[in-house]
Image (spheres, rainbow, N blue to C red):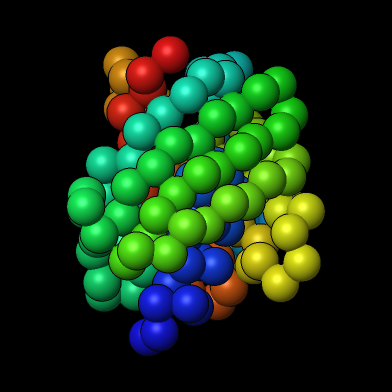
Length: 140
């Protein structure tokens, strides 16, 4: 997989944020979104690991920050030496599903699930047709 393609997938996942939901959560093949009040993801996070397909990258190959506001996100990443900036909106459904919509043309959308335990944010789902996952640490 080219670094260029990996960079776009990384940016989409950074919606994480990661967290980049509704469509995947309504699918019969997706995990349940759960019920109840989801944890707030608002804050700034530092990337700890990023996986797309079978490739996992950790600092220094993949590094950067992800900032969530009430309904928007901004990701500033470096993936295999290439800067990646992505921004857009996100939505949380149920207790654990998330979807991301990038405003950057050509960036894939992300749908998946997340968990926030203490300061560790874990996200997994699909970005651009590829399985993707990331782990972040909340810094503020």
